[in-house]
Image (cartoon, rainbow, N blue to C red; front, side, top):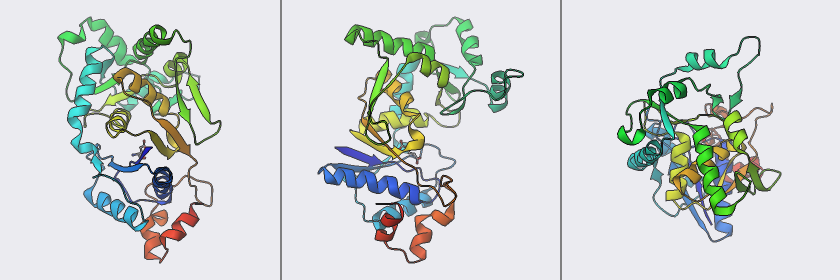
Length: 298
Ligand code: GLU
């Protein structure tokens, strides 16, 4: 078993993170497995070295140790670029110039209430997909566009995955993954229609930084050989995106364990900025690592 904890150094480590980290660490140790750390710092604007230092210090204070040097996403840009290049050449990506306001305007049908939401916010209405398709240029003749947002054409992506599955297994199921955390546990199966209607054309590379959370998490889990992803329930819906990308990029699908989120006394999710729940605050107030374990119910 190889597990990981993958914090973004954009704020302090709070109780929710500590829970995730301890769980992933303890699960690996219980199986004499490996526990790894990954610093998810591709968002250069929001990531700060000070946060990374503090997170690592808090993790050590909690008594966690990891079995290799932490992997930093900021060192992985060549791998992200190579994967984008593959997807681009396979004609699965298109450039998008829409801003938030364009998307909201195009997605909001008059008199029909709020636009449909997916794991990444409003489901992209496909404006630039149409424009790009109309240009008639083959991707193999065009280099990967730089400094622009690139979206996955989900319709084409699911067709590609389905074709591969039919020839491999003759199976009807589109895709699946194993879940060992949230209920119902077991094989989570999902359909192509669900991917197109409830998720849509997600962003795989941003104008201001190469790659995206979805692309990098898939490539990095594969590069670190992660067998079991242990993370918060808020990422459950995004897992279907990760599975599609794993199929398209030819990397294995780990087992997923989505755990319940730690909430405050009012039942609200702990925000990253909620300093009151930062491990650092508990430390300053004299709490011990055992107190933290107790607080998160371990
Ligand atoms: N970096 C993400 C976060 O801090 C976690 C990603 C993951 O576990 O897949 O929320």
